Amino acid sequence: MRVIENNSSQIQLQIDQMKQLRAEYDAKEVKYHTFSKDPSKPIPGMTLQESVSLDALTKYLKHLEDKYAEIKQVMLKKYVPVQRKADLDEEMMVTLKRRDLAENLNKELQFRHQRLQIISNALTSWVKSDMSSSFQDFVEQIQKTKDLHGDQGIIEELLEDDPGKAKEAEILLSYIERFNELMLLGEYEKAACFAAHSPRRILQNIGTVNKFKAVGKIRGKPFPLLLFFEAIFSTSHACRRPIDAELTLEGIQCGLSEKRLDLVINWVTQERLTFSEEAGDVIYDYGEQDTYNKAKCLALAQMIYTECGLHKKALLCLCKQGQIHGAMEYIQQFKDFTSDDLMDLIKLCPHTELIQCLTREWNGKPPSLSFGLAILHLFSVDMKKVGIKLLQEISKGGKGIVEHLMINDPFCSLENWQEVANICLQNGFDRLSRDIMSILRSQAGVTEISQEDDTVNLMEHVFW
Image (cartoon, rainbow, N blue to C red; front, side):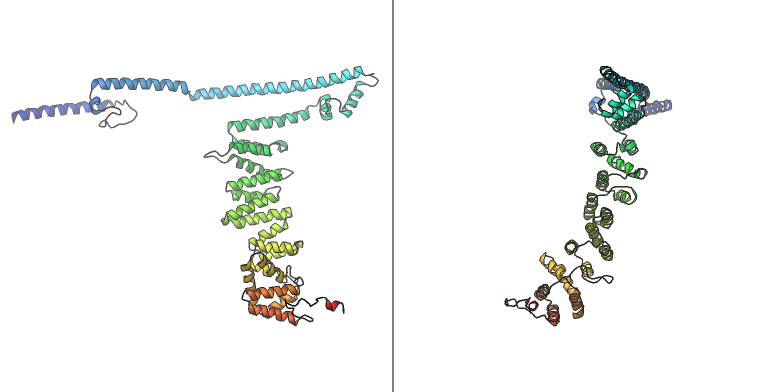
């Protein structure tokens, strides 16, 4: 027991010494690392036996010091201070100013050289001639015949020492150069605004569109091509002429490809654009794919088709929107729809209400389409279901409705009505078939002709 007590006393003394050393260490607040790490965990890359070996720890420490020196050297080579970037930017600005000054001086010298060269050539030609006229008259003669450098405008500007038009060309050139610089620097939003405000719209063309297309999409940033179209369309009111049809089509395609129908709606309804059939087709096709926004697309396409005078497609959009009464008013307004056009319409938009409106009187005016011919057309183009549905609606009205339709139908012949009666009989509308045949028999001078009887002459009464 005495031995154990002595050992316990020694262990307790060591514990107290360690606590005292720990307290002194904490009081000094020595921090060797910028991050905390659990000391109880093993050292990465070393076994437990190596982590308690002084030689192994010394060797590992030397390895870490070498690695630290190597990383520090790499940082000195690959990275530079932020101040260095600011200095380089300042040097670049100074260099660009010097370049601009040199370019301006060069252009001025080129202008003077060209002027002196033209005058020298004119003087040489005048000396070689008989010099019967004055030098000024000689220059004017050359100017009229365009023998001198082939361009009268340039000669006039240079000889009068008025570089105003040349300055304008320099401004246009500087716009193009500045635009290219912005594109190279990745300042696509600034480049788009710059192109939208370019003089004479020199940057509003397909070439600029192709440059923005070449950039593609940038993750986390707006689509550069869409920025370009937003910029040029928003400034269209400030221009005398609207945006041309080609750019309008490209812009609408870009907006729809990015699912920005809201932008396209604003462009079509508010901005000054040049519409085309292709632009209307693009919006129409988009509506066929996006059923949620189909009604909006149909309305936009109808607006474009009407503006372009494409009345057939505008009428189709009205019908597909369910605006049957609006479509009938449209037909009455333009009056250039043929029976074939209306037949194609009901084929593309087979609404029963539309067919009924087309085959009946509208606002006191005769039907636009023959009911009998419409039925025959539907059954001939494999639209039997629509034809049967239409026959069901007619059969509900009774014989009076059928008689009214037949009497007010100047386009359907007696033979056609017999075909309609046969179709009704074949599809289970026996009463409707009998009503049609009864109405045909009740007409004066009309007799039923059997299909087997080919001896009857339909025109016999004409010759008597």
